[in-house]
Amino acid sequence: MAKGKTDSLRRKDGAWAPLESNRADKKRAARVPSTPQTRSSSYKLAFADLDFLSSEELRPLRLQLELMKVEMALSDRDIRSTVVLFGGARIPAPGQEAWAARNEVQKRNLEAASIYYDEARQFARLCAQWSAEFDHREYVVVTGGGPGVMEAGNRGADDEGAPSIGFNIVLPHEQAPNAYVTPDLAFNFHYFAIRKMHFMMRAKAVAVFPGGFGTLDEFFEAVTLIQTGRMARIPVLMFGAEFWRKVINFEALAEFGTIAPEDVELIRFVDTAEEAFDIVKAYYAEEEA
Image (tube, rainbow, N blue to C red; front, side, top):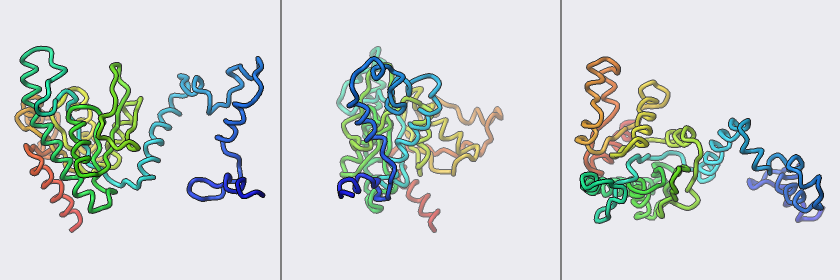
């Protein structure tokens, strides 16, 4: 057998694969003569038929594909754990205008909140420095990949020359990944549920900055998994005690009885990146002791 043919029968991991690949068949199928039969959608190979793959009946398969694509990519990079940053897309960098403000009150509030952009950037920078001790396999920064606090997180990792992950999602308004996400770690999701699974699957800490419905959704997903024992307890750090205590009255929930008093202890309020990072580092120092 010719050497080129032998090489084509090996997978990317070097294992022997005698069956012909789907890529080769896809190329062959594209070269068939154009006839009424070959132009019919029924003749397309199932895995190459985007209309078929997008059909309502194949939603379970698409859920699986979305889970597996990211999992395979992160495993290929040997990324074993992450530090997750949640926070508002509308919070600007210091000195920038609050593009999403509808009135002067919102503009002042959002621009004053730029302190959290700085804290997110610094927290990510500290995590990236720590991650370097593990060849960037542990404590890798991950954000939602968009603007605001998410950009700050990826930017902080980039300041240190460290890789960082961005989990973008298709929204009604156009949203591109921020410029600081590591290109081959920039992912795009259709399903919010699968995206949130990936946030949690490797998380060793969650930092939650002021934000809106999306941030609240992500925070409650994380703390519910911990509260119900569906994932290990990890540090959940709420940046900005004044903001969060005004938005969510955790003590009132405990007083009413809809959560246990000890559930409030699942979260820690912090104001600075250094304070948050010290909590995370001390937590895992105790775990390893």
